Image (cartoon, rainbow, N blue to C red; front, side, top):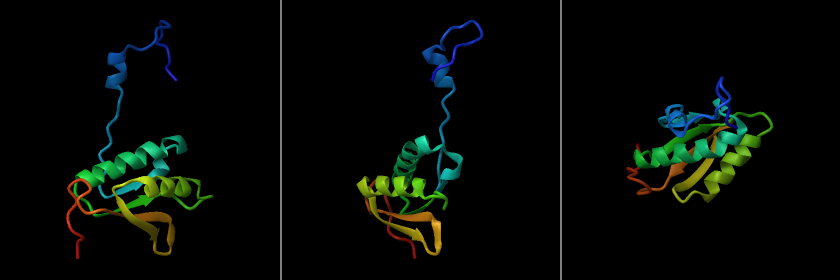
Length: 112
């Protein structure tokens, strides 16, 4: 939803671009910091960046709760062609380990 300024004017497109935040992810994303409606875009961008950075194994923290985010994350991962496989992070079912396909964006071989 766009908000008007103090004069009742909608923001200009140039002003909107200045307010865009770019997030650079590493090998882990904690979705506790994202609203549920932003989960899909955050996960897709995270996987894109990881793939282009040559990462093979990444971790997504979605929380335990009622597992709504976890279900959404798994649905996204199942459809992403860059994802080879994924699983719960051992006994910690509040996080998912994702293995990216080799060559899915410059991926390197699996580390020892």
